[in-house]
Length: 433
Image 1 (cartoon, helix red, strand yellow):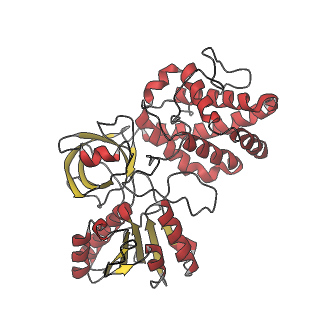
Image 2: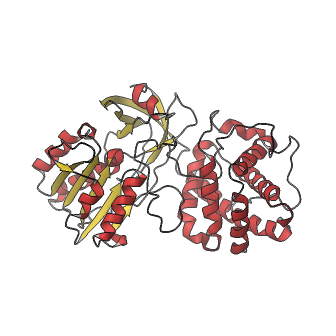
């Protein structure tokens, strides 16, 4: 596998912009129409994810072992879409057909063999992870909506109860599909540590133009049944019993996973009368966005190990701490602390820069992200937990999702009889045993 050849050819293909995912998904749906039903009717905002994810995989093809954990997660996560091994073969064939179309005469047998080797490696990791997880967990969990409490004009506290045991760690996230928006999964973070009754709190903020969050905030009601995907993410989790002091920095509904961690710590203090000291900063634009203020103020009053600071950025009349939460975080005592940061991409990027400038070493700054980005790019942090992004998505990127461009019969769309040519088809073997 020639990583340089893969990168060069991919860079050349991406110069064609939107035509690339259009051709790819058109070829996939024309040559394998049976997979079309796996995707939502309105498939907006997927092309960048396809190009970004695939480009990242290719650019790191010579060090694919560094992405094994992420690829394994993708394989397990795709079970909720009913993806099977045969679908990987279909995707591989359409990928190579797309490369051949845009590379023209440069697509020869040597380059095809390099792409085939790279794709087979990626697909094998994903398939094996899916097969292993299927032995112990369901493809998804059905959960009943217990309550939907409108906390602010645009934010709802959703409580759901899975019908089967749903194991997760504080700080992880999960994907959810609501009955009103089938096949549109969105990621949210539990705002609580695991409970004996199995209920899970989710903070859902409505985004104008979003296709899922407005329905959750306005229409989802007690008694509805939702689907939950397997929990993901490790970077905002902590080892139980870890006594290292924590600086928790939240932006908006990025508060949710940090509340889960805070509840975990509170339980440890109650059981063992010992635990880490915690300082939580919650940054919002306007004071009324401090939707969990009463609870957090009460915790700060009754827990001597817990300190809570509200930070408001856009209201000059606010009598408390004002400014960007990352700037305020960098003014805190950082010695001996680990920082956990969660919020929108810009908030996370700014906070990381401020903390680094204040002398906090990178290994003591933890933040979660679920999509590929160039190494070292701090600007690609997580979307706000429980909040759709401006592009109406909060999902790990993957080349197995749909394009946002509808099929048409125009230029650069494969004909109805399109079939892989020699050197284009890829076969993904089932894992041994």
